[in-house]
Image (cartoon, rainbow, N blue to C red; front, side, top):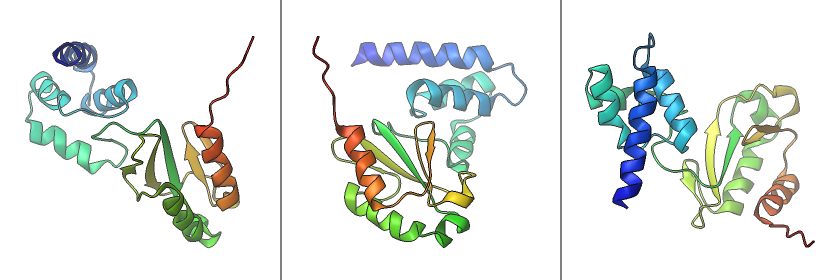
Length: 163
């Protein structure tokens, strides 16, 4: 475990060091760290604070202000359900209820098997074809319980190719 922390600390120090002199460096640093690890680990806060000459409370304040930043490791698949008005008008509330029941989790939670993390978002820019859901880099339109169940099945089914 200590080796993993040493590797993580080294990576964090390199990431922070490469961006610390950028104007407004905190947000680019946080984005880069989240891109690298999938979240902003607690270990990053003192490293960032030291490099930017601020307090860990300052760094924490920025992380907690922006919903985009995660403080824990997400599941293997991040699912973001749009809760904006246009999607709500197209049935997003019922869809959201189905998603939560199917995964047995609420927003900002991860399934027990670590497969899915569920997040609420407020507009995916796909208003005409809601309800919408983002899975990774894909925005999926006209979601309904059947399409969601198929998505979950596809994401949790492993295909073996025999040669």
